[in-house]
Each structure stands twice: as structure tokens, then as C-alpha cells.
Image (tube, rainbow, N blue to C red):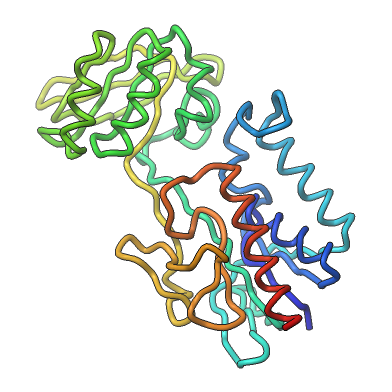
Length: 301
């Protein structure tokens, strides 16, 4: 039996394992895809304190090496359920295995809602991005498009408008759904253009990098050249399987206190899967530390 089982191997999950091991607890991290989570989509990370520049993959590799050096164990499996037995929990996987731990930290992350176009996944990090704070500087002086018309899309576009030569917001509805104050602030910018009632139908690329889009408005299809596309059409948390243990808010994110505790003793949540206002690398790491420290404190009490 492990002291702490971490579900998810992104920055929050690996930080939780690091803090658990350094507090004398045994930790197992179960990850279904690849270690690092969303940060691995960023070719350059320049907003992490103390590090001038690194790739997301480089950061993920460093974290994985660090937790393994501390004695954490890892498994590449898909968790389907967590059972509460009071003093211990059972974590079950799609592969048919069961792992037992005194505490569980759910760091399941989120996934970006995608457009569903051919070649889209291959262009992530090569012209397709999701975070203006993370990647906006790479497009300074260039033309970019933003897919979406809600608050998130408008906020992304506002940040991009500060440095990009041209920002085109593409909304499939006949109007933006974001707050009016955001619309007023954004569309008064001379380098910002809005196209409504439009659907992105294709991605143009050259030498593995995005060069433009094909868009359809009514019966008319045209080509729109751009250097980058920021997709902001929503995030999808995958927390439903754990709802018996941890409350979900109206958007499907875990409800927890700032110590990352849930209503089930011994179950904690950390990272982008948790209900909060800022989802960045730094906040994911902070959650991982908080959740692990809370688990260690509760175990030692």
C-alpha cells in the first residue's frame, strides 16, 4: 500500500509526488498518456520564475527525472474509479489493475476543446496555441487568429492585440457571447477585426508550420493567411468518474478549499481540474504542493 496515489502526471501531479516523497511518504503517480500534461504543447516556456526559457517537454522531463530520483513510482494506465474505504482508497484502472493508498490526489487536468480538423493535433505548438500568456510573445508583430467569441477568447485576443500586428477573432455564432466590457475594450483596437457567423474548415501549412486557414461564411469559402491560431472554445474537465468523492461545480471542475481538500477525507484535488480563476503552470505547481502537504498533515495528525 502506498501513502499517496496521484492520478495524473502533469505539473500538479508530479509536484504532489515530489512533496510527498520529500515528506517521507511513498508516492505512486498514474498517468494515462504522457507525463507533463498540457505544458508539453508549449515549445517555449518563458514565464516560469527563475528560468529564462525552456520547452514544455524539457520541463516535463526534468520533473519526471526529479520525482523518480526521490523514489516515486509511476504507472502508465488509465484510472477509471477511486473507491473510498475510510482509512484507505482503491484506485482502479482500465487495464484491470487495482492500487491501494492511504490518500489520493486527483490531478486529472483538462483538455482543450478542439476544432476537429485534419492535421490539427500535429500543428499544436507549430502555429496552434491555446494560451496567449504562454505563447503570445512568439507572435509579436505577426498576424494571428483567435477561434471563439466568449470571455476566454476575448481575453486572449486582448493580450495578443498588445503585440501582434493583426488579430482576427473568428466566431461561429452571429455575435460574440463574451462580456460587453471585454468587447468594447477589444474592438476599439485598430489592429483587431471580428468575423462572425464563420466556420474554420481547414488548416494551411508549410514545412510543418501553420500558414493560414480556410474559412466558410454562408456559401462563401475563402483563405485567411495567418502565422498563428489561438483556439479558445472551451476546456473540458474529465472529473465525472470521481463525482462520488468530490463535489463538482456547474462547469464540471472540482470544488475544494485552498488546501485542495474535498468532502471525502483522504481525497485531494490539484491543478487545472480544480475550480479556480487562473490556470497557469505556476498555479498548477502551487496546487500540487498544497495538496501533498495537506495529505501529509492529515496523515500525521
